Length: 539
Image (cartoon, rainbow, N blue to C red; front, side, top):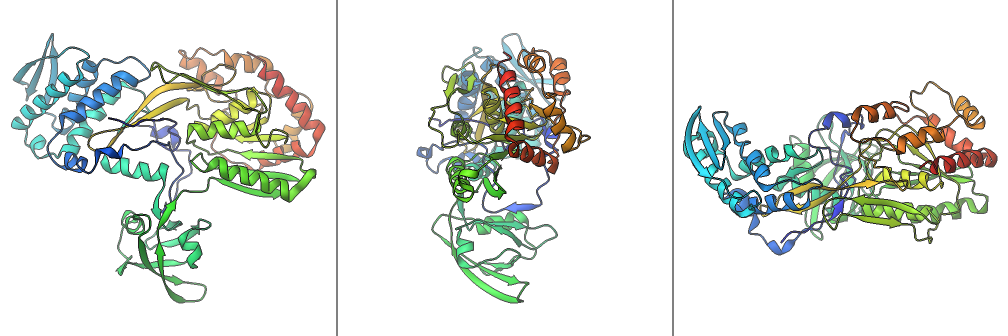
């Protein structure tokens, strides 16, 4: 039995595309509370605790049965079990270069040092159980010949085979080991913690900030406090991971910490009871008669916190509110359902997003319900080259429906949806099973969202950009039509199109100034919105 969910790998670095994500600012703090969520998988806890034994004990054929079946059934492109399994077995070479796996017609040959060691009949091409059994036999035979394989634990074998098998798939499909999966579940679902962000750069553990209403804040811990002792153990000499693991724990359990407070030179002791910690992904501030909302990601609490921020803005500013800036620059994404809910909050009507894939459950279309609480507020959306996944869904939905003026650079272009499949060893398999499409029909994968007002390069001042908007020099209907009718099999064309407003990771203050001036001038905003609606019809 497996548990799965459609999600976006917003906060997950793709398996073979880490260089593309180097623009994301380097985090120097260890997030003890929880990082921005990646996707909302639900564990199948009916498997009990026996899975830990499968990780540290003998290899389990059930692991390979589940993995092979799920890839063949759910991956966005058709894939045979035989090809997946054979490519996976060739990963044994990574553990010992003398081991080779070859296919000879209807037989699988194991070679060691260039010499044939064993030949076994190949199962049918979609016989997952047969290929799982063959995988076990090949590994057993290889271990008899290789000291390195004989001494490798089961997780190393799983990792080598799965990493090799997944080279057949896209860059976002990946295998997470038991430890990696545990960290990932904590990231997207929350975990028992005390609600602080720690800076461990240079050793030690300085409290960088605290989550509101967290155990640490309620107890009186303050930013810049230095944690020196956790449960009687000195922090000095511990790694960042060690510190985090000691502060985390089961919800309802307690942790004792000792802190030094530089401002008063006091040494203080706190007993904190851990609670479920889910990070706040929304930040609001009033900017004159404009509401500025920073949306950092999409986790299970995003829509609720965003709704409260909108209510606060209405209370603070009242009927004189001129508009809202929704800043999604650097937002790597998160939960698909939350991106739909956020779009729905601003849209009076219209399509939000559609997903299309090979599996019968992967094709869905979402529409605005017309009950959003912010459909009447003038809106400017800020994006950049690090706006990805769920944030691209929101930007495309608001732009394609002529609801908002989008300002910034071309977005990342991460338009795939993953399903997360628990494995018998307590690891997880992330499989791309659908692509999502903007309301105007174009797939966002490898292309992204083209903003109406391009600010790439930073060579034009806010005054010059505003002058361009007044003179109608924004993204043209022709440019948007070309964008939406791009040949997605032609990567060279996609690169040329993206170069018209090159993606950048910069978060320039001038973008905020442009948004502010648009909203402060109703006639200018109306002109820009008319352009947005004209390009929205370029289908």
